[in-house]
Image (tube, helix red, strand yellow):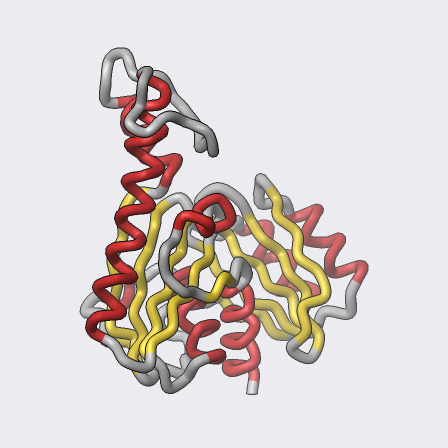
Length: 240
């Protein structure tokens, strides 16, 4: 069995796979070694992969390396099934690498746009087994926080499904501006990608994707677990 540890900016996701099948996923608000140890107790874990967008806690690596014979920490130097053309691969987030791996595993010969709507929104491009690069913009909550932090009077809001558009009060003006702005951005990225590609796939994922997916006006594959699926794929690819 494989244990997947995906440490993001706001939470940590744990997943257990057995022969390619996902058995369990958990989301933790904090990276907790005690919770991690429970997964090791409950399952016969043989291999582990860690992906982290920030520094990995030393207690976590110590725990895993002491109990598991094969622990892989994902970096741009990991063996990957596709080529990376990013000019600064050392700065390429492991979450973006994992998402690309999950997409490649599903559609190895296609043009793929992976949209990951989380703390930031990332747009990553794969073309027939080559990672071409991607773009990064602020996510929903980052935009709400920026409006609050860098102005004197605007309140801090969180996403809501109901608001007037155009906004008829300040709260609705912020909600409409942020949510509609993100929606326009994503739809235009997809529209532009579709114009340039023939055999293309759109994959939509990330923590805010469930909130946003009904606002997308194009065909896409909704895969909230594409990153952890990609991590399991990379783990098997490196463990051979």
